[in-house]
Length: 262
Image: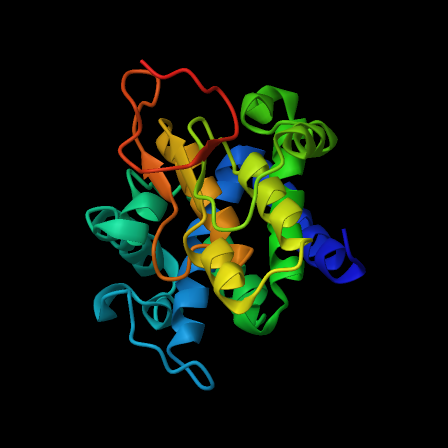
């Protein structure tokens, strides 16, 4: 992990220790960070130099969280999560069944205004943002009480398996039990080390990687992990379904893990 991403991870994780005094688990904290980071980055994309159309409805955009405090903030944040969870596409995957776990409005306000709002996340290199989020996921997995280890395979093991599978440019690659996305990221890194032309680079970043995950919370972590690494573009590379019950609905050329389907 780079010094820049390590500093961000430490900054965010220090605040988690404060929230743990209120009974918030590591997993709950990473989940709330996912919601808020997504909203902040969606806001930044509408500003110069990006100037992209807003994907979050005006009533639930980032600025709406900065305009209220106290109990009004807690109530509004709950409404934001509930309503965005009804949207389709990437919004629906990120906010599906989302709930506010930070019951102290003052601490929620500090997380929003003092930690996340003060960073310009879109200007950070994708490696920094991605490594920082991966660092949080790893810390969460190391928390035995949270039981998150089942979704976070050790990265050296993942890289060894991907080295054996040898994914290639222009392939569409699927992980039908993707967890937080470790295998997909390793496949991305493996393919990107080769000599790729412009079309191959675009395919790798926008279309090559597909994940399937049955657990809503894990799917949202994976979708955010991909987004922070610059993978998937405006689409969502993660589908929420049971790949053991039936063959995944997305097309693919190569399976990274768990090949037999029901």
